[in-house]
Image 1 (cartoon, rainbow, N blue to C red):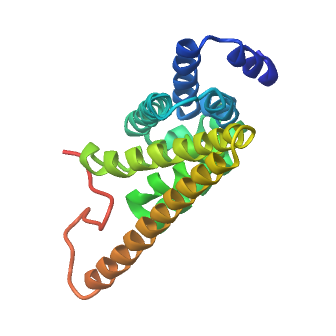
Image 2: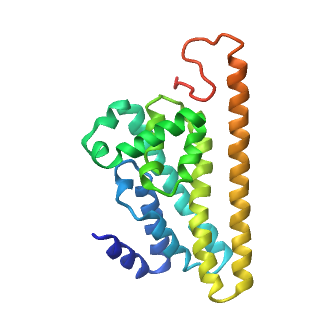
Image 3: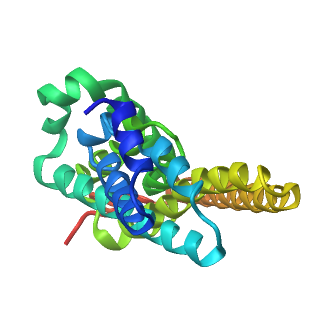
Length: 225
């Protein structure tokens, strides 16, 4: 089914089916391989344009966040089970090699918080690949879940807020400004979190250079039990 056919079909659905389908699209977009072909951001914009109240927005946000998180968990499990050889699979070499290499660079730079940063990059080639790359390091779930959950919540909120803002702006300029301010606040919070984490990582790395570390230890990449 072509991209525009998917979006047209999504627009034609009643609200409950629209929310469920958008959650399914968010899940698919977040799975390595499938995410290369799913119009996730466009689907979120379309779904958010139908929101008429705060409860409706929160329900939609919760559904797509859970979908995105589950998709990333699936990718993480694939990385844990298949490992770096996933990079050499036919599908990844053809469609996701650049995304894999970018995800690996993010991992080297940000540690586990590459999961958060990667989710904020609105391209499936990076969003869906980072969890698999991290999974290949055999990180445990206790380390994996906090940054990926925060990233899923923020990355789904931003396009939803844009869609709600555009729809509200057609009706009421005050509502548009309120939504835009809320979106900007969310972005600022995300930037502050990233900067703090990077500062903490640098401080931890600096401390490690003055003390020996045991085999397999690292500041962010914790092996699974």
